Amino acid sequence: MTRVSTRPHGPPGPSPAGRAGTHGPAEDAPTTPIGLPIEPNGPIERLMSALIRKLAWSRLADPRIAVSLSGAGLLLGMILGATAPNAETVPIRLPLSILPTMHQHVIASLLMWTGDILACLGLAGMLWAHSQGWRPDPRRLWLISAGIVAVMVSLTPVGSSDTGSYAAYGRIASQGGNPYATNPHAWGDTAYTLIVGTMWKKQSSVYGPFATVIQSFAASIGGPNPAITIWVLMILNGLAFIGVGWLLLKTSDDPVRATLFWTANPVLIQQLVSGGHLDTFVAAAAICAIQVARRLPTIGGDVLAGALVGVACGIKIYAVLIGLGLAWPLLRRREYARTARMTAAALGTLALGYGFYGTSALKPLFGGLSLVTLPSPWRIFELSGLWLGVPKSTLVTIISVGWPIALFVVAWLISRRISRDQPLEVVAPFALTFAWILVAPWVFAWYTAVAWAALTQVPRNRMTRWLTIVTVFLALCLSSGGQAHL
Image 1 (cartoon, rainbow, N blue to C red):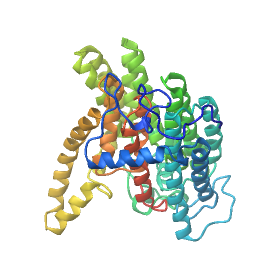
Image 2: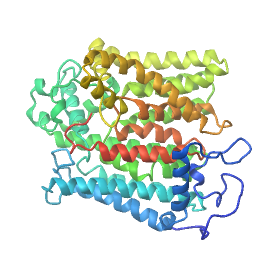
Image 3: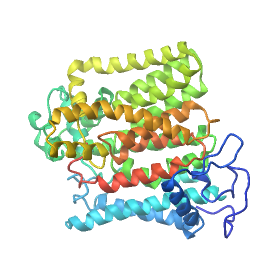
Image 4: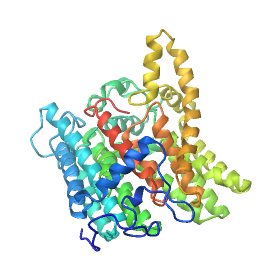
C-alpha cells in the first residue's frame, strides 16, 4: 500500500468538514448540517477527543506504520491458528495448521491479546491517515485482504468454540436429526462432541434455521470428519466476508472508507474470519437489505429487502434490529404500504425456515434470552442481586424487561451524535445494532459485525472510535481458549 498524498506535520487550519486534510480525527468528528464540527459533550468525550487529536498526528497515523501494525496483529492470530490445538483454538487442525503445537497457555493468550491490540492500533492509524489525505486503491486493499482471508480459512479457528458447535449441529441435521430437539452429547457422535465447548455439549442449537442449512451443508461434505466440516464452514465464511467487501466497494459513496471499515479492517478479520463466526452471514444479509431498501424503493425492492431481513433473522435473531431500523424511517414518512410489504416478506421468509423444524426450534432461542455474561453491566446487576438475596427468577425478569428499554434509549442517544442530514435508513440500523452491543446481557466481539457493516454507510462521525474500542474490549475480555463461547 503506497501513500498517495503527503500528510502535513501538524493539524491544519479550519477547512470544510469531510475534505482530506481536515480536522485531525475527522473520521470521528460529526458535523452539523452546515458542515461545522459538533463539539464533544461531557468529560469522557472531551478527554477522548484530546487523546485522539494527539495520536492522530503522531507516527501512528503514518500509513506504512498503520498497515504494519495491522499486519503484525493478523500475523499473531495466524500463528495461533497454525500452532493449533492450543489454549486459544478449537482442538483440531486444518490444512495450514502445520507448526508445532503451542502448549504454553499463557503465551497463547498473550499472543491473542497482543494481536487484538495491534490490530486496533493499526485500524485507528489507517482511519486517521485516510482522514488526512491517504487514498489507497480500494481494489488493491480488497485483493490483499482476500489473500489474507484465503490463508486464514485454512487455519484452525481462533478465539472461541463456536465452529465446533456449528459442526456438531450440522452433523445432527445432515443425518436427519433435529438439532433443536437434541444436542451433541445426546446424539453421540464422539468425534464431533469432542470439539464442542464444554458448556455447550448438552445445549440444543440456539441458531436459526438458515444457519442450520449452512451447517448441514458443511457437515454433508465433512461426513464423519469434523475437521473437514469446519474447513468448509471457514471457506463459506471467508467467501461471505469478501463478498460483502466487494458489495461495499461497488455501492458505497466512499469506497475507500467502506473498505477500511470492512474488508481491510484487521479487527473484523480477526473476529469474523479467524473465528469463523456466523455473524459474517448475518452482516451480509443485513447490508444487502439496507442497500436494496435505499436504492430500490419499489414493490420488488421492498419484498427483496424484507426477505433478506428474514434470512438474517433466520441465522441469528438479533438481526430483527435491522428490520426495525429500516421500518422506522418508513413509518415516520407514513409509507405504510412499504413497511407492510417488507414486514410480510420478512415474516414469511422466517416462517418458511422455522416451519421446517416446528416450534422446537424456538424453545432453545427463548432459553438463550436469559443468559447474562460479563462485561455486560447486567451481569454486575445480577451478581449484586444474588448477593442481596433476590431470587434469580426475579432478576431474570427485571433484566429481560430492562435491557430492551435501555436499547432504545441508547439507540436514540447514538442517533443524536450523528448529523441530522444523514438518511435514517442507515443511521437507524447502525444506532440500534450498536446500542444492542452496549446494553445486551449476552454479547461478544463478533456480534459487532452488523454495526460495522451499517457504519460503512454513515459519513464520518464520532461513533467510529467507540465501536472500535468496544469491539477490541470485548475481544480482550471474552477469549476463553475456544472452549466456552456461544
